[in-house]
Image 1: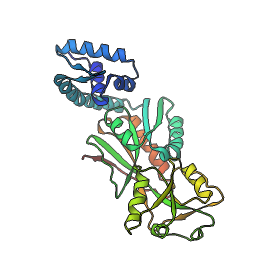
Image 2: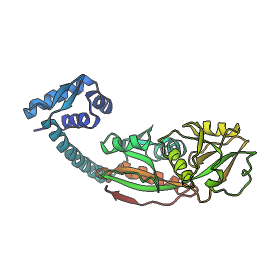
Image 3: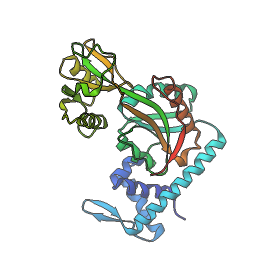
Image 4: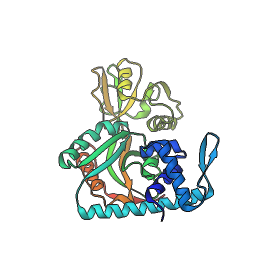
Length: 312
């Protein structure tokens, strides 16, 4: 009979592409991964990995077994979730990943709520962008991922993941206090097309949205400064070096020389919680989603979301 834990090791090698990646994911040594793979090869009577340069790759038999192991591990997770649901206790460990502003503006209150309500549940948070968190979630390396989705840059959600819409998060423009439009009640983003811009790096969602929006009117935006941290962007705005768009979620207090002005129409991103469908019955997942929803319904511009199963 095939050993389930060795199949987990094979699946980790398959999804991460290396023994080192599998070891990091499973929190074991590389030698432990190699030993488990050797034992699994003896169980099936076939070579599952072979040398490729300084690393290894799965053989045809190894890849076939790994793909079947993925289905088996999902089935096992559904069984474990059903048993946990029957027991009813919110306990054990749970891992969450969130992009930076959600990690700062959303998760601290949610984690405090969970710790207060469920002392037997241990939750750990890591900061990851959606392109990192979603594959890790799909592979079983995370339990919940908090991600962002834009109307004109729709997030691809793999089959087997469920989602809940948590919050609509609008952006405002941050202007130096002496900017001609700083005292306006609202401003169209195109009115600022000729400004010097402070933005995220090329390839990041907010940066690409800004460039696309301004190009609609045939204007090539002058992005003169880039920074990943909102606090850095606001410091540059405060120094009179340009204009920035800043989300409300996780927003830090602005320097006195900065004014936030609503954008009309407001650019808005959706904040989503993702989890594996096979883990839906697990009480810890439900408790975490409920805690997220409680916090988000109190936030400005929020909307109550319902769970949805999504296939691409």
